[in-house]
Image 1 (cartoon, rainbow, N blue to C red):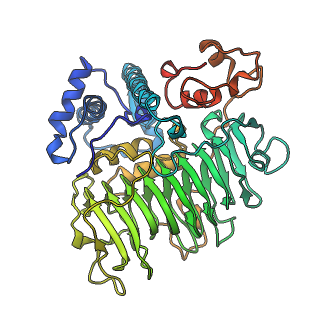
Image 2 (image 1 turned 90 degrees about the vertical axis):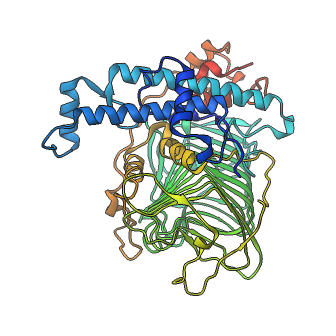
Length: 552
């Protein structure tokens, strides 16, 4: 059975419409009981989670009712231009998820998301306060084997000030030395001329970039034999200009103690993601691995590794390897959509491997066959519980529980069922709080990837996912057009950086609001009551509203 769901610190990203009709939080929480009873999902939702999920239910219901009331006859063909014109006539505005809502509805959504996020952060920080200081999470909400990474905490704060490939102020220069916290004064696309090597003991805070954030394109960011790294809110898109034998983002040769959170890792030529060759104690959570391209079109190679956590990720429109899990791997609350040949792949090696598969949702798309999981041997020792499979491509989330016999099909030549075991075998120091598969789908659709500001590529991918079988395509490994088949990269707004007179990475407005000195460049490095540097507290405030944060 899955453990009870808990309120995650980034849940403000999970509600994307209006809660204007809610009379109280009790009313919202009651919706969760009415619509999503615990007995159908193997979890007993605690009150905070009921409130959160009730918000989602209310939001979805509001949108559906409004859509039904406004449906014209005959149906007008929907295009961006006529949608915008219709919205203008009706006085609607575009919400963060791309939906058109009333101004009042958007304001209510923002207020509800703020309230949920503040309460969530309080819960997360209260839990942190009770932990051993040696078990301080990399950030509130960090889970799994890589959750204890400290990154560049205690080191210097380094600014990325331009979008050039190299030289002073570049990302390449910022990550070339260890013991740094990297912040961004610019947003936009960084075209990489060559692979970017990354040093140890780094914290890379992509959420500090203005505008729509940062995207790396045309080559690879590589972690090779390094350790103790925190990476958050970035886009890694290799594309056809990159080398054919590399990943969009890779960790290899005994990398360890790393957490990657809310990143979009796409258009990899060999795989989107790689964790290989003796690497260990790594978490990849809340990320998107999608649209692998020529010559393989694969999602991820997780190979010859130990203690890897893959949690609340979206694996989408890859022909196979979502991922290939060859080692000791936790695979919890992932969503796999529109695989090509195979969804989740076993290790199929001659030595024993361990894989815990818990609370995942596998959803067939236009490019998919029925092999949601496969390529196992008896040497793959698998614990599986609470996984759901939706193979009917009917635009609805109505999957059925996966049975052990579903993990191998008769037409899979050269493979067998794995060896199933009765208990999970992997137990990280900060466990993943497992949701039901249905709850995982909602959270992943709302918040996976570089979701602080989703760009057109990720908005398109999420639109395909939420079609639930009707939209999406793998990009064929035989076609060297690569990402162009999906429309290419598009633009990412660079935005305008906030005023930061002491150049410590914390804007003056935040410093004034939280008792810091906007003329003192040293206070960003001071620790708060929990042990986080104030620059980390500020960075967290960008994804969790500031009223819940405390500084010292």
